[in-house]
Length: 261
Image (cartoon, rainbow, N blue to C red; front, side, top):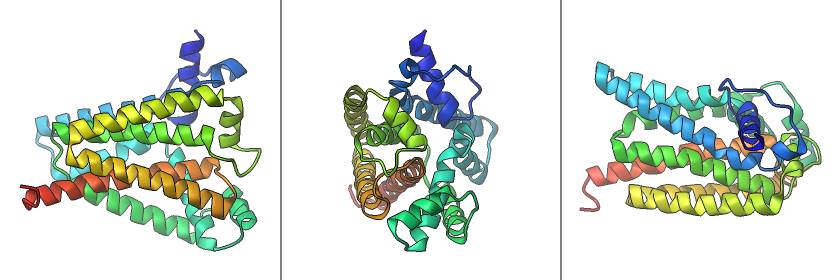
């Protein structure tokens, strides 16, 4: 029962998928970060289903791209995009770490949030329209959805926190950090290996993109915020997702130009 409650906690917090609402306790939150990657698996399966549906009904490339752009947002309810927007405002302020943390708590949406969100969606949509969504590409993005959440959960348990309040602190404080880090690090290694085996050069590029964004996440969080927060976790997730998608599109483009023939 505790196993299913642990999964339900992760889905209740990090997705908009209807699920039972268990009472949050020390036991069912201890390993809830380990269930976080399952939400990525749901996104991957829904994207696969959407591409199959578009192929069956003869949907246009633009309609297919629109669905692929919307599915991850609908699955999560936009919780990670909210963190991306807040962090964009904070980074755009060029203030002190204390000032940036204050901006993260401000519920209002500033100019930098609007600009960067619009840019994110335009680029993400264009990339979705550019990729040839064959079985290999769908496997790659499905694994990418899971990998980015494994890395995010690992970071939440392993990286220093900016404050002792908020969502990131709630999950980090409740977690059995040693075991959660071990499980999610092992999962990340397995997922990265699977991505490379399935995607070959595209998989390598996507793993490198994820690693680069994780490194940037750690250093920007430490230098500019004094540690990670829930908003920064969302910022990392959205950046990792679009960078991995961009790596997939870039390799497909180069392969089409026969650069690697």
